[in-house]
Image (cartoon, rainbow, N blue to C red):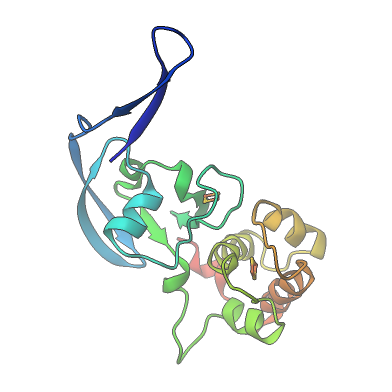
Length: 186
Ligand code: FES
Ligand code: FES
């Protein structure tokens, strides 16, 4: 259910309007962590709602819902996107990558390895978005300076770590022998 707030004829009273008329659905196809998906989405549905509510992709975090925190960051065709500000229909014919697709317990991604080793994960809420931002950075710039790392993650808020360990981890991942991001841009 979507609640639309608008001013009434008096100009003051807020009117709650149930937008149940938003029934039009659009079929889309995309690849989520390399898995082909066919789904139907509503015109106003965000990518974040699609990923979490419909596809139960819980690694994509919902926090501010308005583009301020970066916790919902995913990669769309290799570029960072705030899924809370992206319409689900925009995912049609794209490749979406989330933290879940980075590695698994047997073979962690170098970024995951270094986040753990450097103590860059505390509560972990920012971590999936931070990892995806870091992945996009290393794909663009395999050996970034600490300044470049700080600039890249400036849109990802972390309330626990103070960022230092996160910068350490991304820098260490860039020096990790298994850092193959440059060949892995998608
Ligand atoms: S939930 Fe998307 S930027 Fe905060
Ligand atoms: S580790 Fe808690 S918000 Fe970053």
